[in-house]
Image (tube, rainbow, N blue to C red; front, side, top):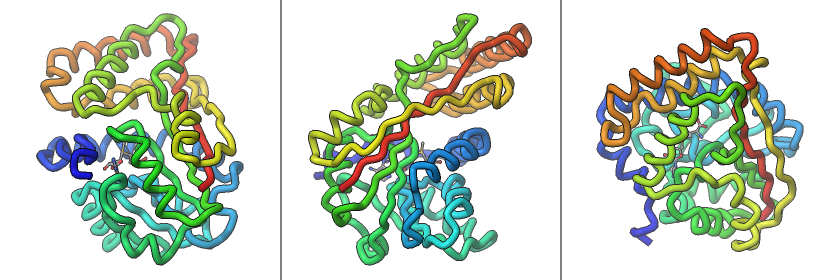
Length: 279
Ligand SMILES: C[S@@+](CC[C@H](N)C(=O)[O-])C[C@H]1O[C@@H](n2cnc3c(N)ncnc32)[C@H](O)[C@@H]1O
């Protein structure tokens, strides 16, 4: 099973502090901007309705998990992530700023067995937010989830798909950002088109497809500058072989110019695929 380990994981193991900080800034910015709507949609889809145990799988350092815990009071919230550095950061943050309902553990899904914390607590609802796009073998990942959870467990997947972006006037800065995402995905062996593949993946591993929605966060609702700042942070700390400092400055300038020119008139949205599967 070793070969199935995500190369993202290799990358994380080599991370230096500045890059780690970059990731944290990015994840924080992403959660701050989008989580309100995401949590509303998750609640509408029934996430956490059973008042038992829920799991945030691929929780990273827990920025979103903390918000999730607030949105589903009455649930114990488990967090699991493959990256030990993120798990440690999350644990440390819980020491300084505790949330009684949250417990965290390490789990490299697709390779390692389901850890006891999760196996013994059997969540009724599992969230994987922006995780599958980083996984090299999404089929193995979903297969392992199917084998780890009891029938009836619901998997809530929030994903992206680069084919869904739309913007007017034409926004070359975003196209360049998407180009960098793609370069990085090629490097770590993951896919940027995961959204459209969810029904096919579910069918392949025998998970029931319960619902599939596309949610759009718009520049009008979030503020164009906030949305562009998110795109800037999303690539700001990519490894230098993917993205040079010169390109970074150039793209930041192109995003700033777009905001100056089209603050009131742009039509830019950030699309997310919400998919609910059942074991
Ligand atoms: C973009 S981050 C998203 C973090 C968090 N879900 C959020 O929304 O803020 C992707 C996370 O998925 C984790 N991940 C990637 N592959 C994984 C795997 N096979 N098993 C568990 N976690 C994984 C990474 O370590 C990383 O923390």
